[in-house]
Amino acid sequence: MKVYELGNMDDFELLSISKDTDITGVFCCDLLSIAMGKAPAGSAWVTVMANVNTLAVASLTDVACIILAEDVTFDNSLIEKAKEEGIAVFKTKKPIFDAALLINNSL
Image (cartoon, rainbow, N blue to C red; front, top):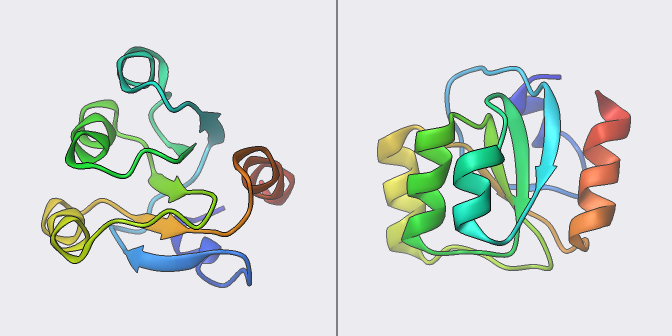
């Protein structure tokens, strides 16, 4: 599944898009230090952490995209930063598990 395809699903709202990247798996974690060490490159990272450090971890780990669950969102400055950095970000009203399961079942 390509990152842009998440935007075609009713449950995900696009906040920032990146290059046409493949999603190779799903990773769920809200503790940034663990995500930094364990998030697989190419994964869709599902979290409720919506701060600048989330973007830094996404950049370091080379995840395919960030999915902000539970209707959490970035403020406008972070959305602009994600665009500048080329990091794909989506938000969803779904809980973390449900969002991850939906993505995983689409792979």
